[in-house]
Image 1 (cartoon, one colour):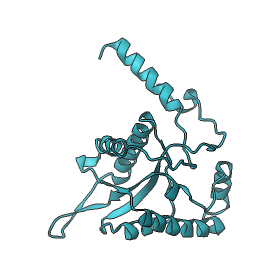
Image 2 (cartoon, one colour):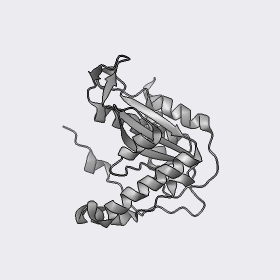
Image 3 (cartoon, helix red, strand yellow):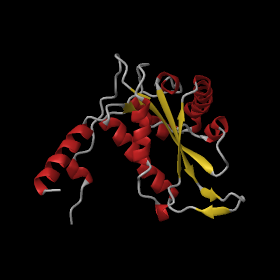
Length: 208
């Protein structure tokens, strides 16, 4: 790519990504499923430890399954907000205005649950170790969120704790551990987001 084209492309991406915001209030308007599928395929091109690609993306479409996920998530969140999180964590969350009610799990028209494969299961049941699983899946989720935003969709990274219920509700194998729940859609007409300020470049970049 010529240098001038590279500079223009980087500046355009920078400007577009500055507009990305996490959304918790979703419209029920349907989204093109192919856009979500394409974003997942982009995410699956992420680099991974030893190229083991230790991820599974579950696109949940069944309303009843999503209802069960919300019910279980809200149960865990009630316990967390009642004290399991601790005062310091609750203080950090307070500017975001979050609580134990999670309508995005059923309101957003698309829901993706990302699982990390802690190890590989051979057909005969033999375990094979996976390497740098957290890092690999984290990079993939970042690429998923970026692609969704650049494709005109909003998303939320939801990590109820603990998340064991997700594997149970979705019938995932024992080697998979839930990493994040990602509702996807368009912002609701009355959507509001916290008035947050990102760190400036000189606060995050060190050049030596």
